[in-house]
Image (cartoon, helix red, strand yellow):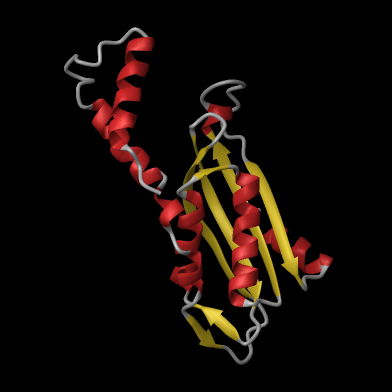
Length: 183
């Protein structure tokens, strides 16, 4: 997906004018360009190739559970175009293959660098890892702070939203243990 930086710059100038600012004043004259570059970066996940990330696998002869936790991320809420950020925790049961650990973090970034809902991102990660690795089971937990809740609206600072997604063979006991460990 190609970002039209000129359209973004025009829109930001119009927004500045709409709130009573002068887009040509010293502190704001480069703001439309900066915002356009920011949106290009924050939406770069649309061009990411999840399959390519999850295809770098290694033979595994005995892992019962692989856990990668505290993967920091930031994304942008599609409802208010405001940031949300937090941590992703991934647990999966390999089916003869494990993926390079950095590839899990890169997969998180691909989904986070889109206009997102936390609930959707949780499901997308679970599906991608389950399908991409042909894993026996996957459990994803995301805990995040949404600035649309902390900086505006209800202004509930320090509130966190926790979402989970499970795929495949995971006992209820294991899911409960993982959830307790992650949150």
